[in-house]
Image (cartoon, rainbow, N blue to C red):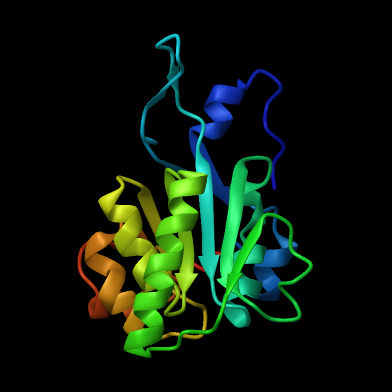
Length: 200
């Protein structure tokens, strides 16, 4: 990744999300260019009335390959205020700033329980940006985030080449930025979907 120029202000840094683009061994040998997503974060105010544009990011994913891929996007949110919302598993118990819950799958009862728990987490954390790649744990989080005015970024997983995930189909209408990693998948979604190559 190219280093940021010394003159770049902190405000400019937090106004952009940088995701390195690497796809295969050939790309790893090249200098990574990076992809910047300009996102107008929700305006907040201090008690004195000054505007604050710094994001507070909710990183939401299940505990397996989805977590691995979201961790690979660390340059997008490193150094920014963030917290995790994921499933309780041995690999997530050592994570800092993480809220863990029972695996809900697509069980409607567990989905409702998870929705209630997430409401409490969002009320406490007050995120203004959501970055998620699924799986089903993203569904109630995206609904809550949209109702609260969060900016929502969804990244379809690397393993989906032609067929979209059920989670992706459900949350697509509610996302501000929607990435797929294979051009073959663009036709499965709408015009909002973007393919920028492999993001992980």
